[in-house]
Length: 402
Image (cartoon, rainbow, N blue to C red; front, side, top):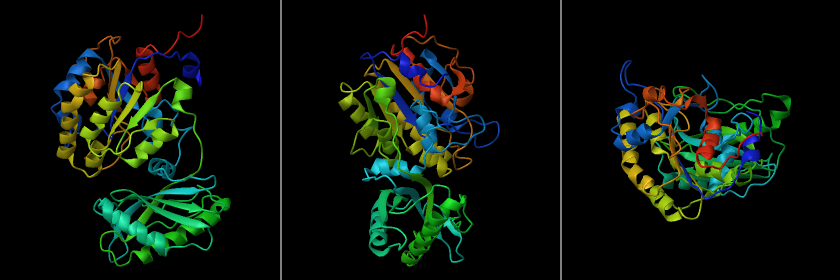
């Protein structure tokens, strides 16, 4: 599809679109031949929507490509995930409302556990409690200075996740991350991938050493894994590109950050799935596009907890009638990527999606699951095209050409 063609066809109306994203929704069976988490879950309400709407599978980036949450969400919001790919540090900074400045260097950090041999035994420090994270970030902020940069900032995100920012230097994103992405390995030493990144690699290496020294007395969170490097940049907003008045309803800072970067108003003060549905109900008259993000599906998948991921899907299904009671003109239910519990991480598998609207021609799908969606009328499409389909069903696109 030619770039920006959707923008050229936009026509505004008062119809409403709800995009419900169960993070990491796609999965795999526990054993070959079994059912996935979504297929296992009892989901009568989602099945009813699937039977009355149209279903399909989405590739966040491309077939065989395992996506991060950042590019997958940009694709969900109608942006090319390769063109607009940025390090996760910037997304965390935006979600936390960090006062960003041009030239800042952002890093997404995990508190993690090193064993007595200097090997990583837990990449998430037991999903560290947020209040403990705050205590440790305060200690790091008070203790660590780097002579090569003007300032270093440590900010709590949630649980084991944190934001680290360097200010006052000539930074480059072209360095290796310190996270080996698996346990039983030592931290990776930051290394420049291009000559102009030597300064940044040295600064990040020194920073990592000082973090370990400062946290040496901690048993659970005694190091940080630094990744998701990003510099400061601006993005075209959804109001300008798609003529929408969008609201983001999410609890985790990073997802709020992505939404804010693309021009969404962000609801604040939310913690639970029930909080998010209540916010949707309370704000429904004020906006015409609603992004509702459910994190727990992804967390349970990352932790390898198949049954717990099933329970989260079932919890969301019970709240579907409350969303339907608002009578959205278009309701889309999908994920940003797959996180099979059997893999304990993101995967390349396509993501199931359903779209319910009065203008749908129902397909032959009668239940919401990966294999059922294979036969759906949406087919298997790049995720970046999903928003255009939703806009069309909402009557927000004019005809192309004479």
